[in-house]
Image (cartoon, rainbow, N blue to C red; front, side):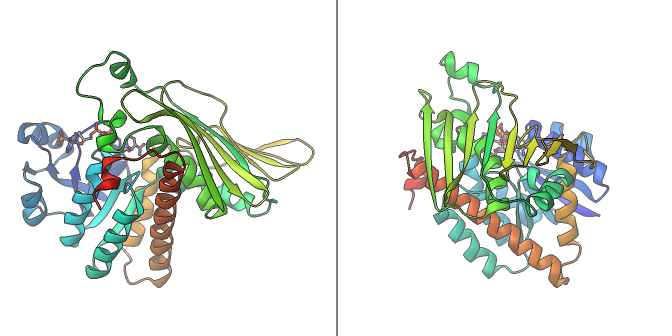
Length: 335
Ligand SMILES: NC(=O)c1ccc[n+]([C@@H]2O[C@H](COP(=O)([O-])OP(=O)(O)OC[C@H]3O[C@@H](n4cnc5c(N)ncnc54)[C@H](OP(=O)(O)O)[C@@H]3O)[C@@H](O)[C@H]2O)c1
């Protein structure tokens, strides 16, 4: 059983802990929150026994192997540094880091701390459905893709009503916005399937807070492209399509994959018949535990290195997309 510590006490951590319990492979022991009472209230129902409001003490005294970090995006860098310096296995929420400079620094730290591992919690690529799609697409020609990734944010009304403070997810200080939030899932699918694009372009629709509420990203691969329509101001239901020319793979979502259909060259649909868990975070947790529990297995180490490289490639593509439209965050100017 892997002992788990957590940073961040919001909804996604509840979902992660539900998946951790269901996996039977992790037990929450230790909670960090900026507020001690919050740490206790959040962690006790999950069986945690140690609580900290000092991040340094959480890492130096806490009895855990794995730390799950689900704090606002721009805070990840400083927290993951501490985690690696303390030789932890780190599950870091997407987007792992804000820019390639941060990634390079973290890579250097990982080299200096060979016991530590860094996993980005890109839950979509760990699902059985996506793994089945990878297999199918490897048999198809490359015809590009269209992804529709829009979800109405419960926090957007606060932006419209000028409520202060600005919700973190819509605040440039915290590297928020549609691309860094939902867009990451689309870029993950594209780079996992097709590798790094030749060039990228992003057309954001900006909110008054200084982040993108919506946008259209284009990833160009030779004579084909992947178009990602992303947004946090509406819900959409179009789903995601991967083209092969005469055949197509359709998915209902790019981030919460529940249904997939392969349409053959006769336009006949064939459903992907795979397990879909109610809480799909279980799949990434199982994948990460498999690595952590088999550190001497060369194949598993190679798989870990591929995920780390994929995380770095996604980070660079997202950064290039932002650079293409001068969407700069304070975290980009720290260097
Ligand atoms: N995988 C998914 O499906 C999924 C879904 C949602 C979010 N996420 C990712 O999870 C991360 C957290 O997102 P979220 O919406 O939960 O963020 P959030 O609500 O803004 O903050 C998450 C937690 O971070 C701490 N926090 C808040 N503001 C902070 C600040 N100014 N400085 C330091 N810590 C602060 C809070 O914990 P304490 O008050 O206890 O310190 C809070 O519970 C993001 O990277 C996001 O992209 C992933």
